Length: 289
Length: 288
View 1 (cartoon, each protein chain N blue to C red):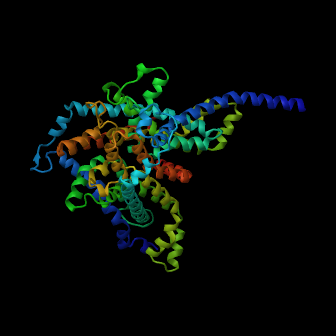
View 2: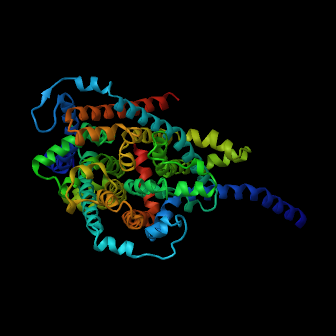
View 3: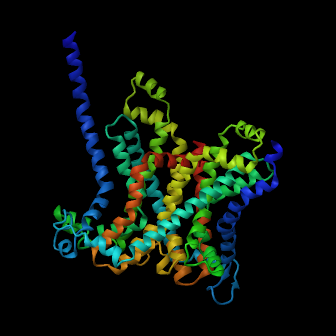
C-alpha cells in the first residue's frame, strides 16, 4: 500500500492543479505587489525603481493616515461593541429560550445579504429627506436630530460603521452559540446543583470554555475591519472629503483612479502586514490568558 | 399534598413569567432591528416615487406595483447580471470543490516529503487579504486577455477559496480510517478508482461546507468584480446593481426591486439549508 500511496505521479496529479492555481493567484501576487511597491509606475510608461520611497510618502500621506485610524477605530468598535452584543445574544439563545431557532435565523439574515445590497439599502435609510431614519426621527418629534448622515463630515463615519457592525453581529453570534452549545451538559448540571444561576454560569463556566472561539471571532472581527472595502465603497467611497476613507478604498483609488500603481501597491503591502501583525498579537494575547 | 403542589406550580409560574416576557421582548426588538431594513426594502420596492416622496415612506404600499419588478427583467439587465453571477458562482464552487478535494486527499492520505510544507503554504492564503493580489492579478488577466470574461472572476475566486476549502477537507480526510484504502487496494483497486468511488463520497459533508462557504464569498464579492469586469455582458449582480442604482438614482421602487431580487437567492438558500449553513460556518471557524 505504501508504494501506491507514495506514487509520485499520482501525487502530482492530485496536487499540482490546485497548487498551480493557488500559486499564481495568491502567492505570486504578494511578491509582485511588493516589487511594484518599490516602483514609481503608472501602468503605461516606464517603471522607475525608487526603493522604499513609497513607504516614506505613505507615512506623510494625511489621507492614508486617516484611513488607518478609521480602520483601527472600526476594529476597536467591532471587538468591544459588536462582539459583546453577539456574545450576550448567543448565551441567551443557547439557554432554554422559546423561539431560539427563529431568533438565530433572523439575526443571521443580514450576513447572507450582499454588501452591495446592504450599502444601497442603508443609503436609503440615511437619505436626508425620505430615509427611514429621518422619517422616524420626525415622527418622534425629534426633527432637530435629523441631518444628512452620510454627507456630513462629522456623522459620516459613524453612519458608515453602523451597517458594518449591524451586518456581522449575527455571524459572531452564531460562532459563539455553536461554541456554547458544544459545552457538555454535565458541567451546566453540576453548576445548577451548586445553585449557580444564569449570569454566574455564563461568567464562570461558559465564557472561559469558549475562549478559543472568542479568539477566532476577535481575529475575524479585527482583520475584517482592517481589510474592509465593500460597504465603504458603496456607501460613501471614502467621502465626504475622505472622512470615511479606509486603507483599501484609498488603495483602490490610488491604483485605479490615479494610476499610481507603485504607491497603491505599497498600501496593499501595509494592509497585509497590518493583518498579520494583529493576527499574531491576538494569538499572543489569548495565549497569555 | 394537592395544596402543596398547587402552590409550588403557582410560585414557579409567577417567578418565570416577568423575566421571560422581558427577555422575549428584548429578543423581538433585536430581531426587528436585524430584519426591518429588509422588510422596508420589500415594501418600498412596490411603491412608486409619488407615493414614497408623498409621505408614505414606512407603511404598506397603497398600490402594489409589480411593474417595478417586471420592468427590471424586460428593459433592465437584471436577468443578465443574475445569469453572470449564477454562472461564475456555480463554476467557482465546482472548480474549488474538485481541486480542493483532490489536493486534500494527497495532502492527508498520501506519503510524500513535501506534504506538510505544501499544506502550510496553502494555509497561508487564509491570512492574505485579497487586496494584495488585486493589481497583479488584474495585470496578469489583462496580459492573457482574460479580462471581461467569466474566467476573470472564476479563477481568482477559486484561487482564494482553496485555502479554506483545503483546510476543511483535509481535516475531514484525516478523520477517516486507513483501513478503507487498504481494503480497496487489496481488492485490486488503483489509487484513482479508490479516490473517486470510495473516498470522495465519504467526504460529502465537507464538500457541502466548502460549497456553502464558496457560494457566500463568490455571490457577494465586489472588489474583484468591479476591477476585472467592466463590460456590461459579463457584469455580476454586485456590480450590475450598483450601476443600476446609479441609473435609477431617483426611482426607489425599481432599485428596491433589483436589490431585493439580488438578495433573494441567498436568503432562500439560507432558509432552506440553515442548519447546514450553521454547521459549515462553525466548522470553518473551529478549524481556524
